[in-house]
Amino acid sequence: MANSYAYHPGNVAHSSAMEIEDTVPLIARSLGIDLVPLEGATSCGAGIIRQANRRLQLTLNARTFAMAEALGLEILTPCAATAGNLCEDLDELRRNPDLLADVNRILDSTCDMQFSGGTEVRHLMHVIVEDIGLEKLEEKVVNPLGFKISGYYGPNIQRKGACGSDDVFLPNYLETVIDAVGGTPISLDSRTQSVGVPSLLSEESTALKQAAGVLSEAVDEGAELLVSICNLSHAVLDVYQIKASRISGLETRIPVIHFTDMLAYSFGHLNKRLAQLRTRVKVIGS
Image (cartoon, rainbow, N blue to C red; front, top):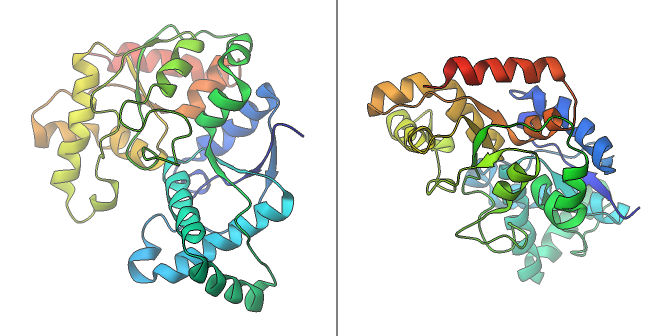
């Protein structure tokens, strides 16, 4: 099928952000996307495994690539960190044939798999803009959001080869999607900067100052809602708002939701949660 993809939900959708797991199948159904589960696929490593054992992370991700390749499908994920990590490892394996050969020897001996380089890794947003199209997206909207919305990308997929045909330094895909679902996009200068997710536990003050910078810019620019395509960053931007404000002295109060929530609501799914969101916008907004 033209719109079939091997689905990798990423780590967060199975743990701290079950709302992603709830909304992605609804979005796929509305847009005619066929998600083929990668049964038994492992974590992308989240940039953590590589710090202890780079070869292990490459081999685990090569196994995921081999699974998608066997299906003849590209990998789709709603997680920016997963997309970024998988793209980085895929690129390294393709550029280094000796490394790929070593990894394939491990795959062959442990799980009877081989990877030749025949798959791609795509974030859900890139698939929607490039494969599905904004015109079809607009056709599916039954609940135009009607908010002033700022989008947050994060740094994980903002590099050549990982961000589709979007601009590496000045991306606008998320803004075009926001416009298509009836929002008024407000572009942020800080939309691709890190909010310090990997260092939150070791350098909390620095990470929260980074998060406060994004949140306060959104507030200052008049946004009523912040939408994140980075699932890991979402937690920092949402859960740690009050603490970020205390540390930085900046105004940080703004509702933050996942990209998949925004799409599901606009397609007419989970209307009770959409009503709750509208209340959050009125109550939290300054």
